Image (cartoon, one colour):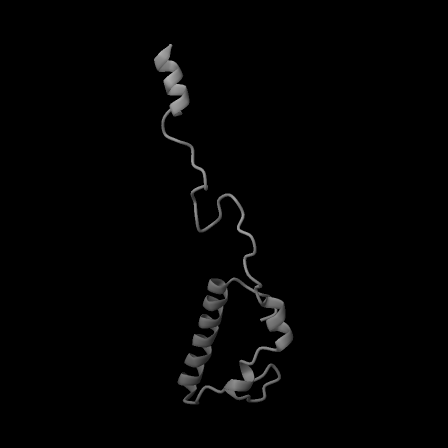
Length: 96
């Protein structure tokens, strides 16, 4: 949890590791037991508790002021160019 991988990457990594462990337990005929890094069994609630200091580091504080321009979610700019000539220029050309 310290590395801070992207969500999809972390999810795939955890899923494959967990599946490998479950299959090994299934073949041995034993129930799956969550263990600490030193091998001692821990409860589910104890294992998946995130320390408050780590929560504070990873907490997002909001987006702040929205930037003018494109971002990953919106591929269009805020002021796209028009498809034709400007009305002022068109009038000047029509009068000439």
